[in-house]
Amino acid sequence: MTLTSKSHDPIINQLNEVKERVAKVLELAKSLGADGAEVAMSRQQGLSVSTRMGEVENVEFTNDGGLGITVYREGRKGSASTADLSEQALTKAVTAAVNIAKYTSVDDCSGLADKSLLAMNPKDLDLYHPHEISTQQAIELAKNCEESALSVDIRAGQSDGASFDTFAGFKVYGNSNGQLVGYPSTRHSLSCVMIANDGDDMERDYAYTVDREFNLLESAESVGRQAAKEVLSRLQPQTIATGKVPVLFRADIANTIWGHFVSAISGGNLYRKSSFLLDAIGKDVFPKFLNISERPHIAKALASSAFDSEGVLTQDREIITQGALQTYLLTSYSARKLGLTTTGHAGGIHNWLVEAQGHDGSFDAMLKTLGTGLLVTELMGQGVNVVNGDYSRGAAGFWVENGEIAYPVSEITIAGNLAQMFKGIVAVGSDVEKRGSIRTGSILIDEMQVAGH
Image 1 (cartoon, helix red, strand yellow):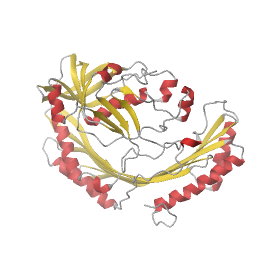
Image 2 (cartoon, helix red, strand yellow):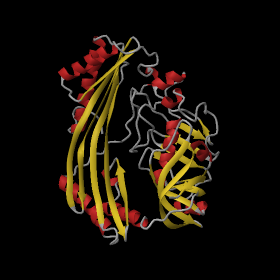
Image 3 (cartoon, rainbow, N blue to C red):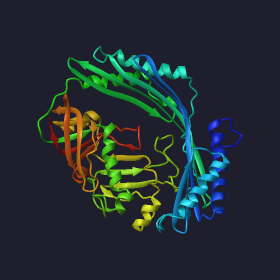
């Protein structure tokens, strides 16, 4: 969609209006003595509905957002924000930021991103797909989802709620280096949470679908059936003996493993020397068969962005090549702290693609490769130390024998060290999970300590 002022789309009109406001705020900051300034504004509007056991539980209309301004003056930094975009409120926010900058400490590493790295003319990544839907239609979607789940098996006879959400919004970023950019985006999702009973045992699980485009969502019936299937499979869990066994992380939670890797190579932890992967560039972190690529410009993808939150142009990067670390993830500030250049990761990562050459397979094939061991489908707790790599989390899932799921397990703890876990990856499945910023299949790790209760 062309972002012209003649558009009849309210989101596009608001985006263009906010761009004009941001330009004025930058001019005001300069007139008040700021050496440099940057302004970010986001706004989101949409509809959320939820039902429980066929009854409407919640209907919520969202229309919120805020503008944040940061000014730099003689090495000092001041920030302020406002949700009110009136001229008076914006003037007050800019004045406050400039005044704050008078009292902060000088920091030579702060400041705008280098002008040569900015995305002055970012490409359209096709992230905006608004869909008109009435409140009643949204309620019917949630109800249909629940009804499908409840019809699967009498043991899954209780719903903990179904939800449908649709949001449209935009982001605008501008700075005193002459950059003024923005883009609209949408996000639609449908989810269902089910409770199942079998004797004294009660289990809970869910399923969901999410996409930029409404028509690409899975059907309400499919999501409901999947939620029922998930919760039914967990009934009558057993405990397992304590010991060291191979562990398979199902694709939908495997991204948590990569999430810890993201933290370990992020500039903030590196310049504070709070990571077990200090000075790891060029070193083997994973097995030789493993590659991780970042592709920020995939059309319609949930984690695509043409620029980061500092306006820096995002670009294709190789994170891991044949097991070796190729880059850290840096903002302008952390890059200056480390004597390096920003990698465009202010605000997070953008579409990681995890591939294992010659060591992948379908989910069933991964179970066969696992042989006898633990399949993890849920993780609990936050027992991960990125400083030394120690890993310990509560888990639930299934015990696998001879490549076949034998029975569900719960109340167990899995433990290891991230450095060893990374090196111990045996295979990555072709069952790729695409509902987040990291596209990965299931991960099989050769050995972890598993403790039953």
